[in-house]
Length: 430
Image (cartoon, rainbow, N blue to C red):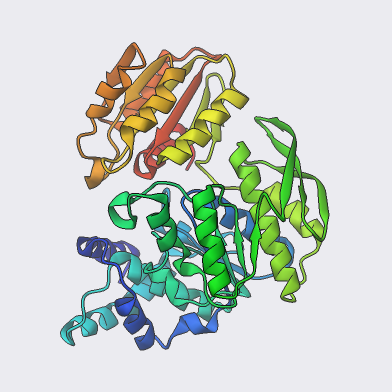
C-alpha cells in the first residue's frame, strides 16, 4: 500500500470506536511475535501533562546518547508525529509498509472469530513492532485513554509515571476523581517504581495505596521532589529542582506555564529513578535536554503584533492552567479568545474560567464528529462577554480574531486538539 491508501485503511478502523479491553491487542501482538516483550519502556499516564513530560524525558535521554523511542497521541498535523526516535518522525513509507504487514493479521483475527481491533490498538501494535525492530534503548510510551484497559497496558515498564489527575473523559473513565484515578493506576505494575506529579489529595491517596499493595516505590513531586521558580518570561522559565540526592540549580525550560515546571520536576524524578536502575544520565544531559524541549500547541506563541498564543487546553484542568498563564504572562493585555470544544467536555465550566478574561470571543466548530451542538458555547460565553461571534470555519474564525486585534493585543486560540491543530497550521505553525 501507498501511504494515503494505508492511512485510509487505518482511519476506517475508527468505526470500531472505543472498545476497551486487552484481549484484542494481546492476540494481535502474539501474531506479531510479541514485540512489546523486547522493549524497555517508561509508561506515562495521567490526565494532563503526559505529552509534555514525555517530550522533556525524550530530550534529556537523547542528550545522554540513548536511542529513545516516543509513542504519543493524538497528533497535531501528521500521523507520523506519533512515532519518533530521538525526535525524528517515522517516514510515511515505513507507516505504509507496517500497515500492509498488519492488515492480514487483522483480517485473520476477524475470520477466526475475534473482535476487530480498534484503530488505536492497531496503532499501538505498530508502535511496539516499530520500536522493537529499531532496537531503541528506551521507549517513552504515552497512555492513550485511562490506563488499566488501555491498549498500551500490555507492557511491564521499568518506570510508571502518573502526571496530574483531573476530570476528563468521564463517559469512559468515571464521574469522580476516585473512579478516574482507579482506572489510571492500572498502569502500576508489581515492583515497578512509580513517579507522580498528581496534586489532588484523593488521587494521591489512591496511588499510595496501590503502590503499597504492589510493593512499588513511589516518588511524589511536592514531597520527595520539590521545585522553585526563579524567573519567567515569554522566552521561557528559570527554576531549580531539589531531590533527596541532588540539587539541580538554575534549570531553564522554553515551555511556558507554572504547570510545566511541575512536569519538569516529574521528569527529573524519573531520571533519578533510571539512574538508580543503572542508566548513565549526567546532570548536564538534564540541563541541556530541558533547555531544548519542544512540544507544540502548549502555550505556544506563534507570532507577535498581535501576539498569537495557541494552547490545546481541551479540559477544565488544562483551561485553569491556561488561565493562570494568561494572568502571569499577559497581564493587562486585551484578549481576543478563539474557542472550539468537543461536545463531551465540561464546556460551561471552561467558558466560565476563560471568557471573563476576554474582550471578544469567537466560537468555532472543532473538526470532529464529536463537536456536537458547538453553537451552545456562544450562549455560555455571552454570560461573561459582550462581544461573542459564531464562525463555523476554523480558519475564518482565526482570521476574524486577528482582524479584531490591535498590535498590542493577544489572540488566544484554545480548545480541542482537532480545532487547535487546524488553527495552528493556518497561523503558520506547520
